[in-house]
Image 1 (cartoon, rainbow, N blue to C red):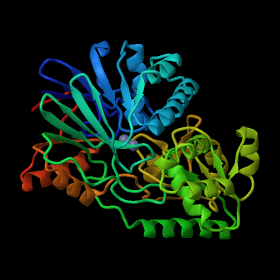
Image 2: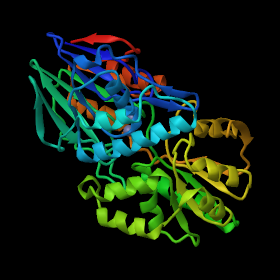
Image 3: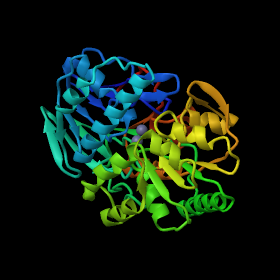
Image 4: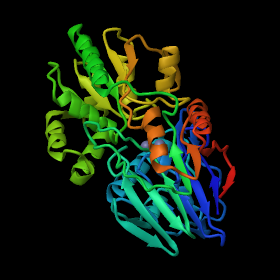
Length: 424
Ligand SMILES: [Zn+2]
Ligand SMILES: [Zn+2]
């Protein structure tokens, strides 16, 4: 049996691993893309997609699902296994990516209809239920990363493979942490390594600092811009802000609104749906760019997509608020390479409508991560006790740190490059 690494190899983005059995039955673990200022990067081409027997999708984020429509376009016709919230969220995220691609004149290589067609192949799998396809059996477990997210155990030809997708073992305001009663002694564990070289600060400290920063900004007469990921981070920030009264209205804009409404239809996928509904009822919504420009002239807290400042309504707010030093931009997550968010942190400038623009507003990054930290990952690996360990979904530094540790604790591990094949 072998694994072919098509993406997320020493990088965060375009997760896609192919599992090939000895009789050439082929499965995919995720099918994602990588979005950046320079365009969309796809995984290494999966040859003959019509020969794939099934895709196991861990969660809705585009770095795990964005390749599905292109695979459909290229002839893939197999079941795609996903939880119900994952399917519903994937649909809105793919539609949004397509729209942004068109606006930026960066065609994605497929038609809009391929989104609907790809999703029509989705088969629902419930968390903790077992499924089967041909000779393969599989089970999905709660990964605690975003609503609907799962880690996946596949058994085929007497071999057992555990794939973490993106995983968070810590509880947040929105979600319970991942299930930690892992399948043990598997042949191969493929683990994400986003935070493989660092720990997260205690969440309570991060929340406190975030609120202090917002409060100070409001006190000096400024507004607060909070770029968020639509799924997970937007709701986490809403839940946090709903407990405080900072004296100015909180606005929710962009995909974050649609995603929150959708999640309220899947109450079991979140920790406390009543709390989220309550928070949702407290925020104000923004309709279109004219209203956006009006409210941006007044004081407020603007929670909006996209989280890495790569597009969406956040760009309108940025051009309005970015030049006034009284305002603050509070980044709430990981900022990928070649994104405006990373550029802001490193150079103090961003690209707005193609123009490099100096930001005089105050800016700061907060760690509201939905990924396991270094120690959580080590605990997970020890808990699973795999025969072989494969690292993916991490920058080289993060993967190296875990790779070196695995040597010390005597677990055979791989940090594959793109296109590598691992036989086991
Ligand atoms: Zn994710
Ligand atoms: Zn991811």
